[in-house]
Length: 117
Image (tube, helix red, strand yellow):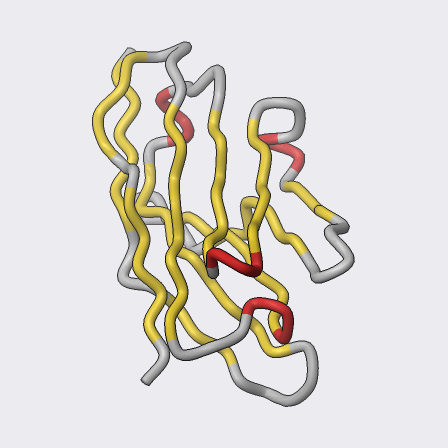
């Protein structure tokens, strides 16, 4: 059974930092591209950052220079380091695993990030 377990969310003041973690079980991260998405109230889910297996990364324009995605295949863990947080970053953050070959696609339950002004 595949599980993606996010943690690290919370309440932080504007300008602060948080580090989200996504622990994967039931899959080998080397076979998946990993990503963080977020969904704010009343808005659609949007891509925040993505990392593939050679380690290439891609970021949404809104988070470039502030957020960093990284992973450790041996630890089955993906992280999202978030710095210089603003209230606009408030959302439910989801971890996603997308198979490099085939249609398999898994999501975690999400971790809430709330940034106060």
